[in-house]
Amino acid sequence: MPRSSSWTIVVPVKGTADAKSRFGDDARRLALAEAMALDTVEAALQVAPVLVVGGPGAAAFALLGARVLLEHAGDGLNGAIVRALSTIDGSAAVLLADLPALRPDDLEPALVENIMVADADGTGTTLITGRVPAFGAGSRARHAALGYRELDLPPTSGLRLDVDSPAALAAIPRDRLGPRTLRLATPR
Image (cartoon, rainbow, N blue to C red; front, side, top):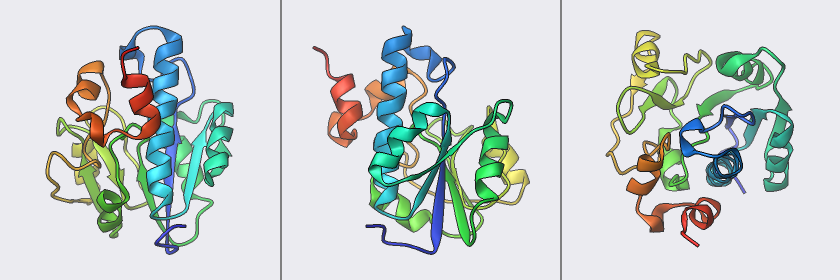
């Protein structure tokens, strides 16, 4: 049960061959991208309602209790987010789906209007609390230019521990990973 009903969190999920391309073969990287997204959404759902926007595979998120909006061909990341945001009344946040160490206690204090959270390397953004997204390479500077205030979080916060490479995943302590990501990150 979400702790906050005044917010809705939009989570864009890539379901294409582009997802997590640095992780090697198609089957492994797609499974890992889905596991991280499911772990991220599950944590977010403990804080507020979630609207996942993505491809046909996004239906799996409905089983967790999220609403699902299918992206349109040609939307692009920010276009899909804007379309999802247009369906929401009230306060909205956008949370990226590659945060497998996210905990509800990391997210809840960040739900304050006009905030952004920098990613682990400090150039991107993992969360905005507003309706004007500018995600993609170098998004931290673009979001700052749009007037978002940076929330100062320790580098160990699950909101900052985005996973864009095998090295980033390996750097997260195993006891911090969500259950689905942990299963795939465990050597067999």
